[in-house]
Amino acid sequence: RDEHGQQFDVSPSAQLVGPYFLRAASLWRKIEQFCSDESLTGDLGPMIQSTLHPGVRFGRSLVDEGYQDGKLSAFKAVYSFYAGQSLGDRDGMVLPGLFGGYNVYDHLSHSCWSSPEVLTGSKVVVTKDVNDLKLTVFDVQSGDLRIYFRSTRSHPPFTKAVRYGNSDDQILRWFENHANLLQKYSVGRLTPGGFKSILRYPSLNDPTNCSRAVTRGVEVVASSIYAVEIGGIFVFSIRMRMLRPEEPDYMSPEERGFDTCQLVSRHWRITQGGEVTQVTGEGVVGYYPLLREGDHESLVSDDGGRTFHEEDSGGGIREKYFSYQSCTDGGEGSMEGYFQFKAGSILGGAGEVFDVRVAPFPLKFPQCYQY
Image (cartoon, rainbow, N blue to C red; front, side):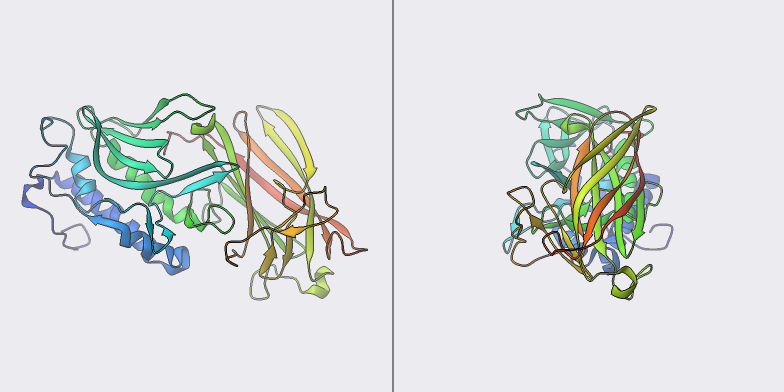
């Protein structure tokens, strides 16, 4: 039983260390609560939980043989409750990974909890990326946890250490950190019309690392993550929408002066190491979204804004936010700025052009590399 009196059934041969077992019970309870909270995950949480495999019985397992003296206690505790996920597709849908992901341009990251799988020697794979270019690997002899990045066209293979205190329980500390962060992530589609996932960008549940601003009924939420696997850059996520009547900071069409509005341009102020860079441009990553209450159209232009058409949204599947991701390099700092919108639409004749603020959000290196 754990400190809450809940009983867990594990194999008598597991030979678990009590404190590690209780910590593993606590972190898995947090994950189960996250998955069952419809307000946080909708239908994604139950789908994630349905992919989890039963815990490992460690009487004779691939990681015990030859490594009885290795640092396996924390590893065994984590894997005694659930031991990896089913991968691939189910009924035509991509199964969601417990570790979520992000997307920027042509790079998609989406990580799943892996059943124990020997990579080489004493190294065991514990997470896999959807494109198999990134693995989290636990060394059962040293207790070290490392990220393996396989070769891509632009970057050679390399590894990155994960550091959480001493090596006796690094895998447990790493997983505890993820369980805590789940409450600060959001759920959405990694690509327009694509599959749902845990999004690793900080959400409004993490106000220290995520900003929100509302201008004339248009909300903009912004945050960033550090992506070492694609050259050590900051990937930032922007989510925008027109608020609905039941939501805080809503303005009626009469108050804001329009029924719809369309993004025209972007303006960024990036501060890093005391230096300020200004960036401006038309649209956002090729999009000129048209916003209306509770909905949007992901409009693109192939001729510099003279005509627009809506990008295929995957059979009509559309999120309440228009969201996009882009990136910036350099050191720690912050970003802020504004988007210019036109009341009505760009091609709709006369309409006021106005600025929609993006409140400052941080560009921060993680205290230790997490995924």
